[in-house]
Amino acid sequence: MTTDLDTALAAGPRPWRNRATPWLMAALLVVGGFAGGAQAQQTYGPDSGPAPAGRGAAVDGPAGGARGGGARGGGPASPAATGTPATTGTVTDIDGDTMKIRRESGEVVTVQTDDRTQVRLPGALKNLRTGDTVVVTGNMRSNGIEAATITQQK
Image (cartoon, rainbow, N blue to C red; front, side):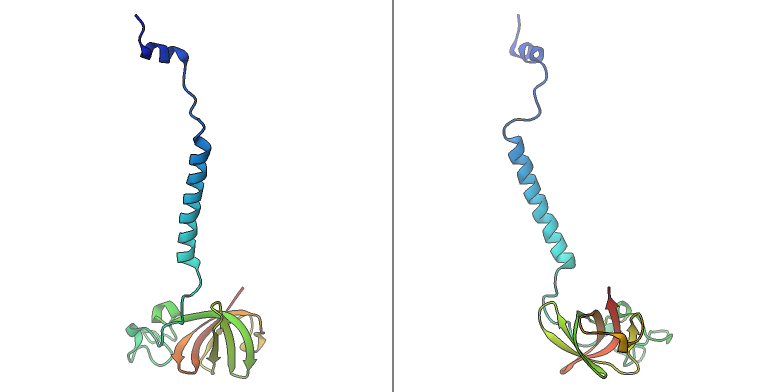
Protein backbone atom coordinates (compact mmCIF):
# COMPACT_ATOMS: atom_id res chain seq x y z
CA MET A 1 0.00 0.00 0.00
CA THR A 2 1.49 3.33 -1.09
CA THR A 3 0.70 6.67 0.47
CA ASP A 4 0.98 10.19 -0.76
CA LEU A 5 4.23 10.53 1.19
CA ASP A 6 5.75 7.55 -0.61
CA THR A 7 4.73 9.05 -3.97
CA ALA A 8 6.21 12.43 -3.08
CA LEU A 9 9.50 10.90 -1.95
CA ALA A 10 9.73 8.77 -5.06
CA ALA A 11 9.28 11.83 -7.28
CA GLY A 12 12.57 13.35 -6.02
CA PRO A 13 13.41 16.71 -4.51
CA ARG A 14 11.26 19.71 -5.29
CA PRO A 15 12.92 22.72 -6.92
CA TRP A 16 13.70 25.50 -4.43
CA ARG A 17 12.49 28.13 -6.87
CA ASN A 18 9.05 28.87 -8.18
CA ARG A 19 7.33 31.78 -9.93
CA ALA A 20 7.28 33.90 -6.75
CA THR A 21 11.06 33.67 -6.14
CA PRO A 22 12.08 36.60 -8.42
CA TRP A 23 9.43 38.82 -6.84
CA LEU A 24 10.56 37.92 -3.34
CA MET A 25 14.20 38.65 -4.29
CA ALA A 26 13.21 42.03 -5.78
CA ALA A 27 11.25 42.93 -2.62
CA LEU A 28 14.24 41.95 -0.47
CA LEU A 29 16.54 44.18 -2.54
CA VAL A 30 14.15 47.14 -2.30
CA VAL A 31 13.76 46.82 1.48
CA GLY A 32 17.52 46.33 1.97
CA GLY A 33 18.31 49.32 -0.24
CA PHE A 34 15.86 51.52 1.63
CA ALA A 35 17.25 50.47 5.01
CA GLY A 36 20.84 51.03 3.82
CA GLY A 37 19.98 54.44 2.40
CA ALA A 38 18.24 55.51 5.60
CA GLN A 39 21.29 54.47 7.63
CA ALA A 40 23.66 56.32 5.28
CA GLN A 41 21.49 59.47 5.47
CA GLN A 42 21.55 59.37 9.27
CA THR A 43 25.31 58.90 9.36
CA TYR A 44 26.52 61.05 6.46
CA GLY A 45 23.57 63.27 5.58
CA PRO A 46 23.73 67.07 5.33
CA ASP A 47 23.44 69.32 8.37
CA SER A 48 19.81 70.01 9.15
CA GLY A 49 20.46 73.48 10.56
CA PRO A 50 23.03 75.86 11.92
CA ALA A 51 25.59 74.61 14.39
CA PRO A 52 24.74 75.21 18.05
CA ALA A 53 26.10 78.43 19.51
CA GLY A 54 29.06 78.60 21.85
CA ARG A 55 31.32 75.95 23.22
CA GLY A 56 30.13 72.85 25.05
CA ALA A 57 29.08 73.30 28.66
CA ALA A 58 31.80 70.92 29.77
CA VAL A 59 34.55 73.42 28.92
CA ASP A 60 32.97 76.77 29.79
CA GLY A 61 35.14 77.26 32.81
CA PRO A 62 38.58 78.51 33.70
CA ALA A 63 40.21 75.30 32.42
CA GLY A 64 38.64 75.70 28.98
CA GLY A 65 39.61 79.33 28.49
CA ALA A 66 38.47 81.55 25.67
CA ARG A 67 40.09 79.41 22.99
CA GLY A 68 39.46 75.91 24.30
CA GLY A 69 42.68 75.22 26.19
CA GLY A 70 42.80 71.68 27.48
CA ALA A 71 41.90 70.85 31.06
CA ARG A 72 45.55 70.05 31.80
CA GLY A 73 46.82 73.28 30.31
CA GLY A 74 48.75 71.59 27.51
CA GLY A 75 47.53 73.92 24.78
CA PRO A 76 44.33 73.98 22.75
CA ALA A 77 42.25 70.83 22.87
CA SER A 78 40.71 69.14 19.87
CA PRO A 79 37.17 70.12 18.82
CA ALA A 80 35.83 66.75 19.99
CA ALA A 81 37.39 67.24 23.43
CA THR A 82 36.03 70.77 23.88
CA GLY A 83 32.57 70.21 22.46
CA THR A 84 33.16 73.04 19.97
CA PRO A 85 30.61 72.96 17.15
CA ALA A 86 32.06 72.40 13.67
CA THR A 87 30.87 73.98 10.44
CA THR A 88 31.81 72.52 7.06
CA GLY A 89 31.61 74.57 3.90
CA THR A 90 33.18 75.81 0.69
CA VAL A 91 35.22 79.01 0.82
CA THR A 92 33.47 81.72 -1.21
CA ASP A 93 35.48 84.82 -0.22
CA ILE A 94 38.69 85.66 1.66
CA ASP A 95 39.47 89.20 2.80
CA GLY A 96 42.37 89.46 5.26
CA ASP A 97 41.39 87.80 8.54
CA THR A 98 37.78 87.28 7.44
CA MET A 99 36.44 84.62 5.10
CA LYS A 100 33.01 83.46 4.06
CA ILE A 101 32.02 79.85 3.62
CA ARG A 102 28.89 78.38 2.06
CA ARG A 103 27.44 75.45 3.96
CA GLU A 104 25.78 72.56 2.15
CA SER A 105 22.41 74.05 3.13
CA GLY A 106 23.30 77.18 1.11
CA GLU A 107 23.75 79.40 4.17
CA VAL A 108 26.80 81.70 3.97
CA VAL A 109 28.72 81.99 7.26
CA THR A 110 31.35 84.62 8.08
CA VAL A 111 34.50 83.24 9.75
CA GLN A 112 36.78 85.58 11.70
CA THR A 113 40.39 84.44 12.26
CA ASP A 114 43.20 85.84 14.40
CA ASP A 115 46.69 84.89 15.51
CA ARG A 116 45.32 82.26 17.92
CA THR A 117 43.42 80.36 15.20
CA GLN A 118 44.95 76.94 14.58
CA VAL A 119 45.27 76.31 10.86
CA ARG A 120 45.49 72.73 9.62
CA LEU A 121 46.20 73.23 5.94
CA PRO A 122 49.02 72.14 3.69
CA GLY A 123 50.68 75.52 4.25
CA ALA A 124 49.29 78.68 5.81
CA LEU A 125 45.92 80.40 5.85
CA LYS A 126 47.09 82.63 2.99
CA ASN A 127 47.34 79.49 0.79
CA LEU A 128 43.59 78.86 1.11
CA ARG A 129 41.65 79.63 -2.08
CA THR A 130 37.99 80.10 -2.96
CA GLY A 131 36.42 76.75 -3.76
CA ASP A 132 38.39 74.89 -1.07
CA THR A 133 36.35 72.91 1.44
CA VAL A 134 37.11 73.58 5.10
CA VAL A 135 35.91 72.55 8.55
CA VAL A 136 35.80 75.45 11.01
CA THR A 137 35.39 75.14 14.77
CA GLY A 138 34.97 78.03 17.16
CA ASN A 139 32.56 80.25 19.02
CA MET A 140 29.34 81.22 17.28
CA ARG A 141 28.78 84.97 17.37
CA SER A 142 25.94 87.09 16.06
CA ASN A 143 28.12 88.08 13.10
CA GLY A 144 29.52 84.58 12.34
CA ILE A 145 32.14 82.25 13.79
CA GLU A 146 35.22 83.23 15.77
CA ALA A 147 37.49 80.47 14.44
CA ALA A 148 39.48 78.29 16.84
CA THR A 149 40.59 75.81 14.13
CA ILE A 150 40.39 75.68 10.35
CA THR A 151 41.05 72.34 8.65
CA GLN A 152 41.12 71.92 4.88
CA GLN A 153 39.24 68.89 3.55
CA LYS A 154 40.60 66.98 0.58
